[in-house]
Figure 1 (tube, one colour):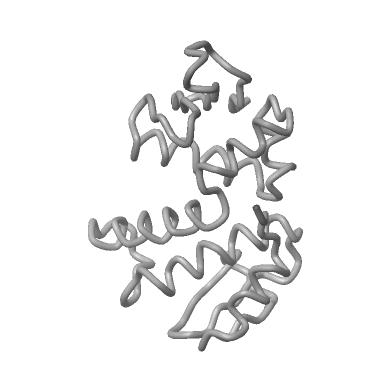
Figure 2 (cartoon, rainbow, N blue to C red):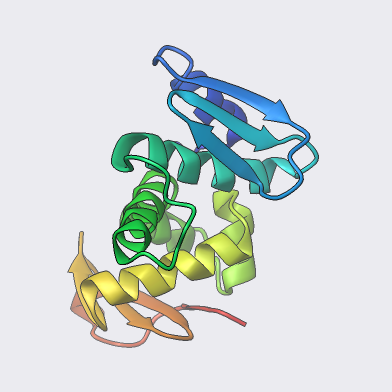
Length: 166
């Protein structure tokens, strides 16, 4: 299982027809125009990987200018791009991986999986919305809540170690 950091994501998409550059952006952390992605140069590597994943999500799922988030269609496209990013950086098996490695808090999980805590918490809320309160996956029970996530072995049927947003 490979946890993707910023450099890994740059390498993975280097062969695609996508140009990724770091720029001194003022109004946002990332921008995309056609096949060109700009990432704000003065962020941490953790923030860069989260931003790059979302911009790649826009590349693969978005059409046109969606800056006006008052438009319902634009909000839906924004949501699709973010879900793409969550699935790319934080697939469900990564939460199991963090659980097996003894991560107990959202801070520990974010650090272990090399994403920002904000990105992790938004992902958990998105998965809660997508899957509902409970999901069985690969022998584990995921219990999603607005405030976080509990994971336990399915056969144990007990509350496991908690990855709660704080």
